[in-house]
Each structure stands twice: as structure tokens, then as C-alpha cells.
Image (cartoon, rainbow, N blue to C red; front, side):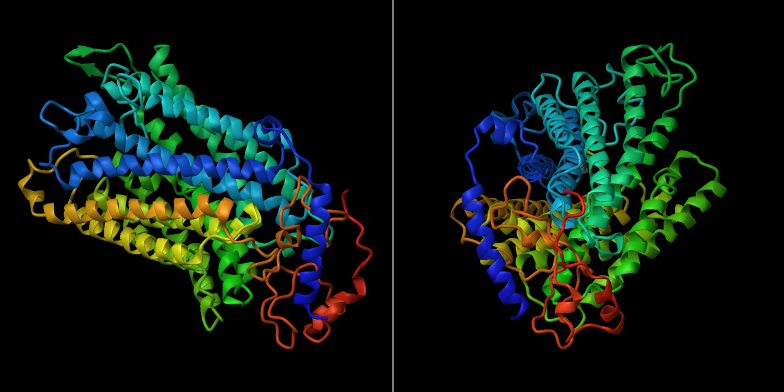
Amino acid sequence: MSVTDIQLQEDLAHDDHHDDEHHEQGFISKYIFTTDHKTIAKQFLITGIFWALIGGGLSIIFRLQLGFPEMSLEWLRPLLGQWITETGKLDAEFYLALVTMHGTIMVFFVLTAGLSGTFSNFLIPLQIGARDMASGFMNLLSYWFFFASSVVMFISLFIETGPAGGGWTVYPPLSALPQAIQGSGLGMTLWLVSMALFIASSLLGGINYITTIINMRTQGMSFARMPLTIWAFFITAILGLLSFPVLLSAALLLIFDRSFGTSFYLSEIYIQGEALPNVGGSPILYQHLFWFLGHPEVYIVILPALGITSEIIATNSRKPIFGYKAMIGSMLGIGFLSFIVWAHHMFVTGMNPFLGSVFTILTLVIAVPSAIKAFNYITTLWKGNIIFTPAMLFSIGLVSFFISGGLTGIFLGNSVLDINLHDTYFVVAHFHLVMGSASFFGLLAGVYHWFPKMFGRMMNDKLGKLHFWLSFVGIYLVFFPLHYIGIAGFPRRYYSFTSFETFSIYGDLNALVSIAAILTFAAQFIFLFNFFYSIYRGKLAPANPWKSTTLEWTTPRFPGHGNWIGAIPKVFRWPYDYSKPEAKDDFIPQTVPYSHTSESNLEHENELTKDEDLTGVEKNN
């Protein structure tokens, strides 16, 4: 009997048992006090989608200002009220607040919580063979801290003085002086409170992820047999656990400067000719603290997306992932190096040139493990029997953004070049490609790939492909031109360029970028329709629609709390046995012993059959 036949019999058996086990839960117990990791993952996902719409919508408003500076925005007055001036233009201070909130929302609430919170929660227990997270209560608290953070940040959008201004990095002294601008007042206070709650959520989640991976793997699931998704989530959780407390300390010191008269970041400040009493502080201290989190944050965002991509590319290429150990090593290298390159964001702060050269070298070194990952993806795709599902298209798109955006990082990592390019649109284009767009594509790829396991139904394939092409082309039309504008010296966060004759020649290019941004944002509503329609009306999914090898596809079509009925399956092999020569099928699940596949075993795999324990007893039950 082939592996496929065995899998189909198991799927039917699982679905039969599921009906017997299922029992109705009330709304409060199912959604408010749930400790089921799958439900909490969906909560993170839905909240992340909400914030993606808000963050994307804010970017469209300020792109209208940049692309069409002479156009009247009076039609936005019902939405923005006082922030549209009497002349029908966007208020300059509110423009800065829009930029600040867009960056904050997309980096933290969408790409950190929405991506890592969703897939770490959903996949870790399923792929390592655990009933749930190590602590269901901590998992519950992690989401509700995130939800509380979201509520505070959302409220800040509607206060009279406007949300936080000063850029998503909220550098002092602008952020430390409530009287500086309107966005430095109550909006900034709410920003800091929200971020403190967000960091608490991230730390609770990270501790849970690490503990679960170390202690709750099923029998046979050694570290050498874990999918690359789990390795990515594991390293990401460690990065967050070590770096987010530093951001919390930076925020607390900022609160002290704002509210209690301290001078950690302030010294010799004059406002309207009046000297403030603050002496002895340094705003550069804040930059050190912020970027010690800020650069690992780049990889906290991108590593989960890369792990998801590894799984999807191997599955849809019908090939083993190329260089499994090299991929793990590259992620470990990226994780370590990410902590010692933070000052490449600070080349223009007046640092010692020798120190700048040290950080330049370290920054260029971190490109090596990143290049290894890109090379391994391309090699896995090479001569593969590729199946172009929407998830596969978004994964390939991620690799494209990772390479093209990463190449521009080499320019910015050089302290000599960075002095000219710093705080221009070249930087904006770079990190939106390599971090923002690549990570967002990883999020979308993960949703398309694991949607059948999340909701038991299939998303529409044609709508998914249309969504990909509109997004892929649109993103390049937005960010490729920004590289050229940045090289020309266009500064970021400027409200208008019409008063600068030097930049007026790029008006048409700015208009093109804005039109592309609007169309790309509109394309996301195709995904929204596909997502929510498919939850209720989508085609019923097979238990293993992609013919994958990993453990999550051995659960019932609608897994209950506990994931598996009866004993948790044992693991006998690594997670990428695709298209093995002489095998009866082009995939062999991790749960199939080597003794059942003698026709396709390699020499060392035949030796492993001597140690197989086929009793099916759980390791930790």
C-alpha cells in the first residue's frame, strides 16, 4: 500500500473520530478565555489584518500628499476633520504623525505580532507534535496584552492633539518634550504605553515558544528533524527575548524625561529662546538603546517569513530543501550578528570613524548568511517539479524582494556611502523591500498555505494568483523609483517638495509611485474577500492538500484542542523527504518509519531501522 493510500485512510479515520469528540463551546470560553494555540493564532491573524488595513490606509493618505501636492484633499475632511487645513491641504504636523503611526503599526503590530504571533502559535505545537503550548495561560495573556496595546494605539488616532509624531523611531528631544509639537503630547504618551504593553505581549509569547520547542517535542522529533519553520520561530523568539527589554528600558527612560523631570536624553535645550533646566543627557543614548532592538527587530520580522518560505518552496518544488544544515547555520549566524551591527544606523551621529569601519565590516559580514539562504532557495527551485500555488508565488516573490532589497543594503552598510544616502528615500526603498514587502509576502504565503489547516477549507486559487501579480508588480513600481529619488537626495519625512526647485523635476515620478501605491493597496481587498469568503464558503479541504511531510497534516481536518486523537504520532525522519528515488510516492511523511520504505532508503537510513520503536507510545503524554 502506498503512502498516499495510508494517508487517505488516516484522514478518513481522523474525521470520523472528530465528530464524536466535538462539543459546543460558548463565545466567552471559545474566544475570550481560550488557551487553544490554534484559536489564539487566528486572533493574532485577524487583529494583524485589521492593523494592516489601518497602516496601509495611512500610507495612502500621505502618498496622496506627496504625489499630488497641489490637489485639494477637502474630500477627506469627513474622515480627518481638523487635520485638513482651510486651504484643503493636509496639516503638516499631522503628516508627520501619519508617517509615525504607519511605521509603528506595520513594523510592530502587523509584521511582528501579525506574522510571528500567528504562525509561531499555530505551527509550533502542530509541527513538533505537542498538544498545546507549554503554558496556555501565558499564551492567552500574550494575545490580550497585544489586544490592549492595539486598543491604546487605536485610541491615540482620535485624540484632539493627534497621534504620536516624530517618526516611528520617536527620537528625542522631539519625543521627550510634550510642548515641542502637537504629536509630542498625549499621543506620544499613549504611544509609549501601547509599546510597553506590546513588549509584555512579545516577551510572554517568546518565553512560551522557546519552552515549548525545547521541552515538548514528540518522540523522535530531535532538533535535527525539526522543520526550518520551527528553527526560524525558535531563533526569532530568542532574539525578541534578548532585545525587546532594551526597547522597554529606552521607553521608560523617555517617560521619566517627559513626566518626571529627568535628563537621560535632554541637555541644553532651548524652546522659543527659553533654556530648559535639563542638563547632562544625550539623545544619542536613546539611539543606541533603540537600535539595539531595532536591528534584531529586522530579523524578528524577516526570519519567520524565511522559515515559512523554506517549507513552502520545498513542498511545492517537490524537492528536499537544499542545504538543511546550512540553512540552520545561516539563521543562527544572522541571529548572532544582528546584535552587533546596530550602530550602522548611526553613522551620521558623529561616531569615531574607526568605530564606523568596525560596524561597516560587521554589516557586510551579515550579508554572507543572508546570501546563503537566497542561494539555497534558488538551488531548491532549480529543476524542481514546481507547483505554482498562490503560496508558492508569494514565497518566490519574497525571495525576489529579499535579494533586490538586500543588495541595496550593501550600499547603506558602507559608512562612506551611507552619509550621503542616510535619511533619503533610498533608505525607505531599501527597508520596505527587504523587510516590509518580503515579510508581508511571507505572511500572505503562510496564510494561503496553512489556510486549509486553520479553517478546513480552501482559498480560491485564481483570486490568490491575481492578488499575487497585482501586489508583486505594484510593490516594485512603488519602491524601485524611490531608489532613484533617494540617490538624487530626496529627504524622507518631508511634507512637500514643491518649494525645492531641485526636486520638482521628480514630480511625475512621485505621482507614479503614489498611483502604484493606491492600486497595490486596492489589490489587498481581493485577498480580504478571498479570505473571509473562503472561511465560510470555501471548498472543503483534504486533510493534506499539498501532500506535505510535516506533522500538522496528520491531524484531523478540524483538529480539536489537543490536536491529535489518541497518541501523538512519532517521528522517524527529517521533514523534507520529497521525490526520493524508487519511492512509491513523491513524498514520505515524517511519521513513516524507514522500515516501511526499504526500496528508497539510503545506506545510513537502513541502519536506522534497527533502532526504530514502532510501539507508538507517546514520549510525554
